Length: 423
Image 1: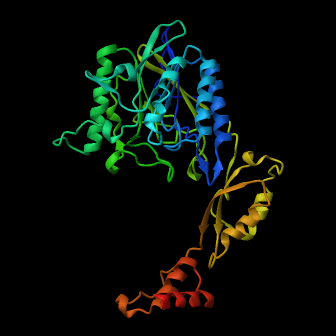
Image 2: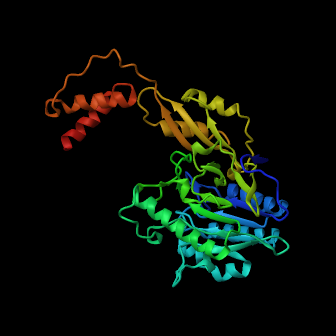
């Protein structure tokens, strides 16, 4: 599916660069022990197809290529196979990888000699020489099929602590954000000295203030816990800013500062995202259009129910009503995110639910337990007592009832008494 994003369209110049922006592949990731490799391979195959069909001049992968600092052999193999296929699909295109916070930065760069043979740029760390920023590493010309240079790419990886310049103690605001601002100013300044006013694309793997996070799926990554940098670290004369880290596709600050989003949902909060790539057309005056092409999802993610929670007794019928294919291979079966309504103690709940779910062609990957709300507005206000004045058994009963909306059984009380005696 293709969609034109408004805000930057204008009459296209005669000479243009077509750039494909993707990020956050997280190769090697698992979901509750289930591999994501079939989903990722299907999405990467679609990226190769889009790059070939749209005849792009550049492909940039902005960080979190891998999910862990110690990627498996299968994850590395999938990366190299994808790079091979991209090169075959777009023989003249520039291909660039930059490291994210999940990536082993130095290991990502290790095959650089082989990458050079394949025409792949890989930047894991900030490279410097006696003159400052090493532009031979970070700055890449983007050429049309004719060989004409139409723009430049400044590859900036995730800014590690050791990459940041020493912040000015007198500067206002977060010292970390000030250091990130100084790093970008240094790198963009060095690039401008070399290329003048030519169109410049810059990458960034970080959180930009105002962007929407995916709850529970993304780390707040700038050192010191001060994780959000303002979008004004990117000068307005940049043709495009290709971002990674946040999994939701979105622009932030202005249309030309954009997150590409991840390949597939990384958590329950990302089920409704339209995962895909950004396609940017860059002319002599900057970005002339930004489009989205979304992926056909190869593995479904089901939220049951869509809202609220189901009593345990209704789960079997709800799953049967989905009419799922019982012959589907295990790695193609939908991932299930289940919310269950429970009253009273939840002893043995997971085993009971597993017994029901195992009868259906799904893979349970998240289980959320909800309990009926209690209206305590009419409850008498508890008198203030010192902890030493309370009976431990009474405290246990109150805590148990608050947690389970039911009093403890005699067996619970017996076990608590045994624990208390051991103390």
